[in-house]
Length: 441
Ligand code: KMH
Ligand code: ZN
Image 1 (cartoon, helix red, strand yellow):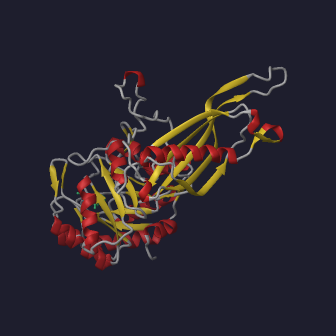
Image 2 (cartoon, protein in one colour):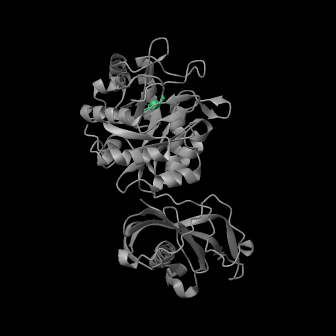
Image 3 (cartoon, helix red, strand yellow):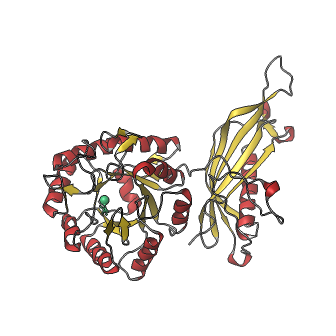
């Protein structure tokens, strides 16, 4: 269980002439690492009341030169808190620099309209248990306005001004899931909904081309009504397999009102992945019933089918239910959580909510976000920014933009993939996603 994920510290300083080490007044890279060390130290002081120790850098990238006269802003964000280890993502940006142009004074300098990222790193620090003093921890929400310190009552709390950036660990893969059909959306809502096995397969292949490595699959009867028939699933899976190599994750949620036996239908196809809904919620005006016996029944069936479960959590308590299943031996770590945000009646699609949910994910487990309707884009982008995976598609949202229907799920996947790449994250292939989720192909 972790608090402290998201804690952020920023230092800003001028690089002086004494820091220049190489020709052209270039500063050596170790100077940036020194700043990161100080950032990490402040983070540990805020988190643990101790300076801690820097154990290792897992990654360092020098991205632009630093020269004397540059103003550097170095930010660190705690991305993981273990019992004694704290993972931190760092970024150093140049925000002002000396102009160094012929005919101008040597003191001519510009503030940069857009900061230049000069260095990124990921590191791990350690604070031994006996040194953890746990003082008051103030976790600023990154999107919150900077507080007006002058107006804060005495004694003033220590609050780091929220940075304008959220640093994403750059090297990690993003698994994009396409939820291409679902059980609730109809052709009246959108004409772009795939229904037949061939339509599902075509859409799955389009989504794979756009960057999806997992297809979250429901099927429909020929009249468009939802079904959990193993025959229909088998036909859809075979059609998809003929066209593409995606991971197929079948639903065991089905549609509201279906019996457990019905919902378990697709497990007869022994899918690589299957959803396990971890609790009951109001689902719009309906109730999506997942009583504790139902969850356990489906967990057993998923295990017996050899499928990797994706844990659908629509409420905080659903995460705890997953931990209970681990204790009972029905699930085993590493777990893969899908936080379903914004279902009317379920937990809302807000940054603080997601940050809290992520803080509950045990080390070594993975998580993603599926957000509903207009929340799909901002919440999946936030998830990718925070290092998680993302699910998009018509099951959860039929619009590309306000009033503009997405022409299938593939455009939504393509946009998510472009966003992931803009963060410097790799969009996982199905092969890579199988490795991430521990699926034996
Ligand atoms: N159709 C919803 C009631 C799942 O696929 O596992 C449930 C659902 C979840 O879609
Ligand atoms: Zn579903």
